[in-house]
Image 1 (cartoon, rainbow, N blue to C red):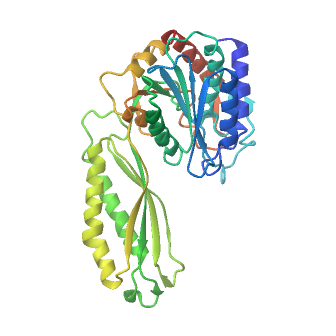
Image 2: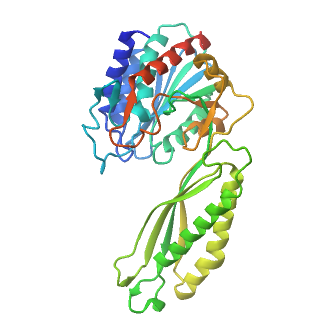
Image 3: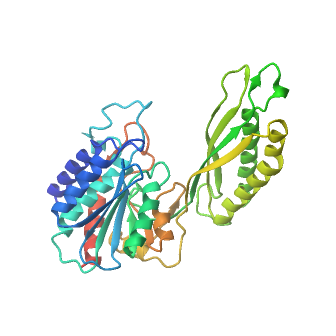
Length: 387
């Protein structure tokens, strides 16, 4: 790998980090930068905006206009930095001791920078199979961009044969991960004076019973762990991340919201949880609440239900990665990615990218330069599968 290519990749990553593409904010400045970059290479480019027009996916194609080929995919958004103690400006890349520091260097702008550095060389080749690039929005908050992109690709009749999602795996080949289902359950009770709790419907108390049931379900899921499961932990999990409600300690809480998630190993795990919750809410909690207040409500809002990446016997994407990395085996991980969405769309999917997930979302996030070198070498070997 040439020094010039490494230095160019670092320059691109420095530029990408400077875009503060936190999920709550717009990513359009970065997407426009990427669109201009690929436009200058003569690539076919289209943007897909979200409903309010503040964010966009970018899809790019080099090579022939035909089915098949490979798509390199990564998300443009990063997690917030508020409340974290950084040693340097998180949106100004810092190089130190063989590492590149900054928000997104690992998750996952390092991979995006490698894609851009690779694209410059690929654009000069006479590709016989298309090479696509997919850059999505809102992966960190529900994979909303990728879900919209899958529909748009189907509408346009674009169907790559294989997808490589460059999430940070220390360049290990990952062939499977759990699903990620995220929800907010809202409780509306009846406010009243704290001195007479029997005259109101305390939304927090009913939310607490709901959470207790979630925890019971979590224990039941442990018993469903499949023998020989490669996941850590081997069972589907449930986790409550946030609860908020009420107006004061001397006021019966009229409202409460619970933000929770589950990470199913198999679809039947999710079905069990949903069925049990539906029975518990509609046959126990809600009738009790409505007996005191007919207007009481328990409503679960689906934030996102992203399917896991299922391990399959035959995988074109895995075969390609084995060939271009020299790997002879693949792992599974517990964290979620957009790979399952590609698989659900009928596209063989695999995960492999620079950096460690242990650095993602943390202060002083970094990626090792050696990891970028390995990624560039992998992507350069991809050329043989396209010409």
